[in-house]
Image 1 (spheres, rainbow, N blue to C red):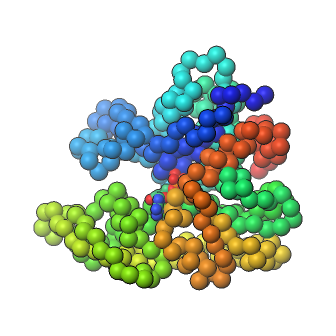
Image 2: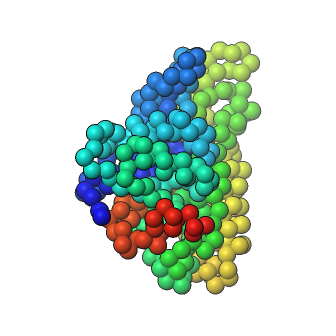
Image 3: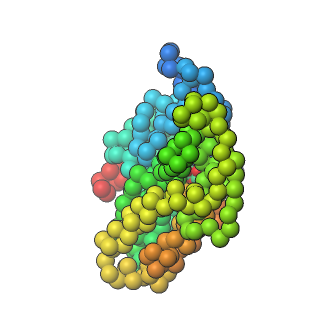
Amino acid sequence: MAQVNDIGIDLGTSQVLIFQRGRGIVLREPAVVAVDRDSSKILAVGNEAYRLIGRTPGNVQAVRPLRHGNILDLTLTQHMLHDFTAQVIGRHLFARPRAVMSVPTAVSETEKRQLMNIMFDAGMRKTQLLDRPIAAALGVGLHFSEAYGSMIIDMGAGATDIAVLSMGDIAVANCIPLGGDSFDDAIIRYLRKKHNLLIGERTAEEIKISLGTAIPPSDRIEMEVTGRNLLSGLPKTQNINSQEIFEALKDAVNDMIEAIQSVIERTPPQLASDIFDEGIVLTGGASQLAGLADAIYQILGIACGVADDPQTCVVAGCGKALEDPQGMKDYLGDGRHYWSRR
Ligand SMILES: Nc1ncnc2c1ncn2[C@@H]1O[C@H](COP(=O)(O)OP(=O)(O)O)[C@@H](O)[C@H]1O
Ligand SMILES: [Mg+2]
């Protein structure tokens, strides 16, 4: 039975979002845990831990428990989920809520089972997993119940889920360890090589958001970046421009587009032709890289659009599944149904 405090969770590699029935999105925090290296003690979770990244004294480490799309550290994941769910539903419950959770498809079956146990310990009565492409499609409001192919791609930080949906199910899919982090890493490598400049992950992300582009920039935007001179070891300020960052991102963008192409190549011809007619829908934060949808169109010849508010689509889809357990039972089922489906 549906309950008012039921929740939907998008467990991303860089962000966790929680939706609550009747309230909408009630939590949106970085998927980060700050740990004391010496004592292994957990110091902070979410927003507070994020503030520590790159600014931490030597003995404090900021860890993203889901870094590359699978679970790096189960204890930290557990701590993070307990903290976030407690913020939303409180610690002392009269009625245990139900949860619908979406995780990157790269998370293994064993890990999924562990996540369900973690959620049970955190006070959930029952946790059902929703495949990420389905969650994204529900969130966007894509109709995929007919014998017609639709392509949806959720580009997160550490992983990207690429899927062709048809007849209410996933026809072809792949989850690749590429996403916004790969773009950040490409910027870090480029500046190190070209300017002997060492920058941190947060700076790289800022550069990506202000200057990053997947197509040649129409006008040259510049920005001052401070990092460490690799030769002298001293702080260094360097002027960089959008043309350079375009060059820096080129290979990573091409890798992403190749991965999309290989899913299309594995798609039955009829469904593939539907995709050529209808285009591709992009969700997830990394899909906001300037010019990415255009680059996909230029290389693959398929129209491509970014969903409105792309970072909330997955949690919105979990929320929709929560509201309509009956209509969504094919996607959610009970625990057993879920396991037997694979
Ligand atoms: N405006 C933007 N332009 C480019 N990338 C962005 C932008 N805003 C956020 N991102 C990137 O989106 C990624 C996070 O997307 P998100 O869907 O929240 O990830 P996940 O689902 O893996 O937690 C990060 O790599 C972040 O840098
Ligand atoms: Mg996401």
